[in-house]
Length: 590
Image (cartoon, rainbow, N blue to C red):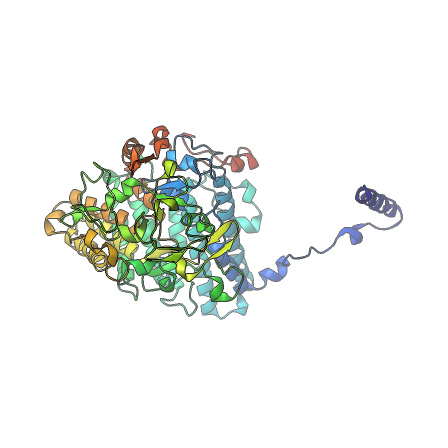
C-alpha cells in the first residue's frame, strides 16, 4: 500500500508541476541501467561483429540451434526420451500426427531466438557500413563477410524448419519495417538464393585461414555453399516437387565446384572416428566450422561456455543431472548390422538384434555403432569404469541407466557428451557439456560431394570417397572400442555395388545415416531425397513393437503418421501469426 501511495503522490506532483514548470520529463527520463547505449554500441563495429558471433551458441534446450529435436527426433534415428511423452513439449515431433502451430510451443522460442540472432547480424552490418572507416579496409571487408556468413547460417536454419519466412535484412532494420514484412514475399527458391548470395559474398572476401579460432573462413563458406546447392538440387522439399525426378544438374555441378575447394584445403578425415566426438579433438582437421563451447577448466568461469542445447541428453545415472533425452531407436541400431562386412540394405530391420558385451555371435556390426549408441553391458563413452552421480564406481552401462525403459528403451546417445572421468559441469537441475556443435565437418562435406558425383554419373569417384570413410571406420576399433572388436565387421564396397545410380544412391544414403547418426540431420536428409513419408511411415509401423530383453517400448508410435504435402515443413508458430494478425501466411496443411 505504501508503494501505491508513493506512486500516486509522484503522479500528482508531476501533474501540478506541469501547471507551473515546462514539463516533468527531466524527472522521469532516467537513463536505463545495465543497458548498452545504442549509439555507443553501433560506433564500435568490431564489437558488434563479436556480438553476432556470440549468438551462435546462445541457445537452450527449448531453442537448441543444433536442432536435435527437429532433425533427429522427427526421424527414424531418435526418440525424444526423458520421463515420458509429456516431458518437455517435443512429443509431437516424434509422431507428427499431433504437430500444430501451438504444439510444441518450443517452436516459437526457436523462431524468436533465430530472428534475434539475425537482428544482431543486421546491426553489425549497419555498424560496419556507418562506422567501419575506423577499421583497416581489408579487416572491414572480412568482418562484413563473416557477418553475412552468420546471417546466412541462421537463415538456413529458419528455411530448413519453416520453408517461407520473412526476409529481414539490414535495410529492413534501418527502415524499422520488421512488422510490415510478411513471410510470402519470396518463394522457397528465392529465399535460398538470398542465402546463397550471402554465403558467396562471404566466400569472396574471407581468408582461407583465420588467426582467431571460431571465425568463419573461405573454406567454411565453400562448404555451406555446397550444402545449399545440394538442398536446392533435389527440389523445394515438398515431396510432390522433390526427389530423383526433380534433380537440377546445374546445382549438382555447383556442389562439385565448392566441395572441390574443401577437398583441396587443409581439412581432412580425423584418423579415428571416436576422436571426432571428444572435446580434446573438437577443433581438429575434421572441423570446418563449429560453434565453440568450453568447460569451466578452459576459461576459469563458473560454467564455461557450455553447450546448454544438449543439457537434457546426458545418460541417466551416469551424470549428476543426466535426463536421458535424445534416445537412439531400435531401427537405427539395426541399421548398423553387416553381412560379410556390408550393410543389410533390404532385411536389416526384419529382426530385432543388439550386441551384448562379451557374447559375440554370427551377427556382426559396423564399428560406428559402438561410437554412437550407448548400450547396456558396454562401457559408456569408452569408459571401462567411472564414478556415477551417487559416488559409486561403475564398470559398465546397465539397464538402470535408462529413465523410462517402458517408453523409450535402454539405448543412450553418446556423440554429444564428454567422458564421465573428465569431470562434469552442472547447475542443478541441468547438466552441461563443453562439446562443440559441428555445423560442417569434413566427412559430411565429402559425403555431399559423393552424392553429387552419383547424380552426375561419376560413380567410381563416389565409391572411392565412401570407401575412404568406411576404411576410417574399419580403423576405429583398437583405440576406443577394443572390447567390441569381436563384434565388428566392415568391408569396403566392391565396384559391383556402383554399377547403377540407383544402387550407388542406396549406398550413399546408407553411409550418411551411419556416419552422421545422432548428429541432428537425418530428417533433413530424408526430406531432401523426397523419401520422408515412405521411410517414416514404414518405420512407425514396425518400431512400436520394439523389445529389449523382454521390455516392450515405443508403443506410442501406433499414433504416428507423416502426411506428405503438409509435414515436410513445420507450422509457423501460432504466437508469431497472432503477433501481427494477417502478416504471415501459414504453411499449407496446418
